[in-house]
Length: 126
View (cartoon, helix red, strand yellow):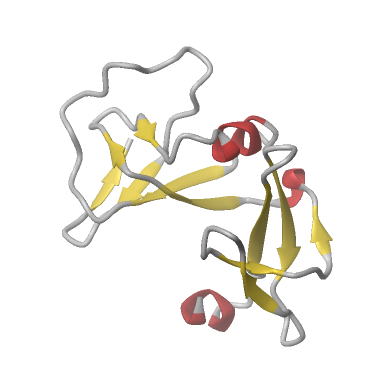
């Protein structure tokens, strides 16, 4: 985040609504209050809301990914719904502690692939 801020990039944080299964996105400012939710995930309390079509790059937390850019998340579908609502040219960057699997078997036709994935060892481009 420090690198992005130093390059005059705006940082947006997401807040999950577990009733609607949607995320709302807020601009990170010096006044942003962050609080852990029921799942112990730090989220903004409120702030300046940013619409999905204004977001150019998304960092996607995940459990696994394959060499084709398919991903497995945490099973709630938050990012599937969110990425479907983003512009087609939004860059999707996975963040993983593990290297790529050869293949993920249960891929659905509406799943949105990653453009990149960053691991401790390397950066994958798809």
